[in-house]
Length: 109
Image (cartoon, rainbow, N blue to C red; front, side, top):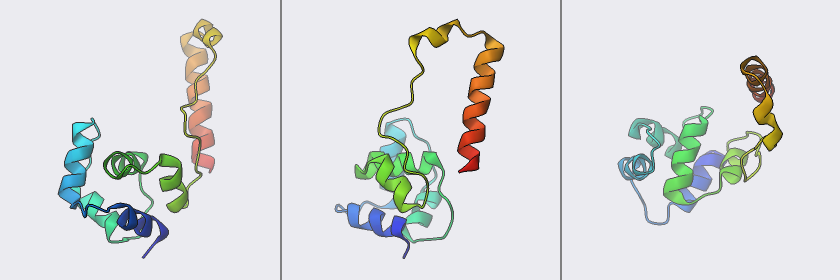
């Protein structure tokens, strides 16, 4: 098993099925397929999306940083990254540039 599937299975103390995990995530606005959820519970080697990790975080009450770490991804921070209030003065082009820079940085890791 992988570190991620070990964490998922150890944290799934109520033995929730992939369908149940999918339903819990859907109730919180995270739409994922139970096939995808099942894949990670069985340790199929594939890098999970942030959406899949979020579904597990919600259903199994595991912090996102811990899930990312177990998946071999940069752990990140617990709180979201928020620009200072003065960033509201940026025009559309500047905002797009900031967002593009963030996307580039995330893809490099």
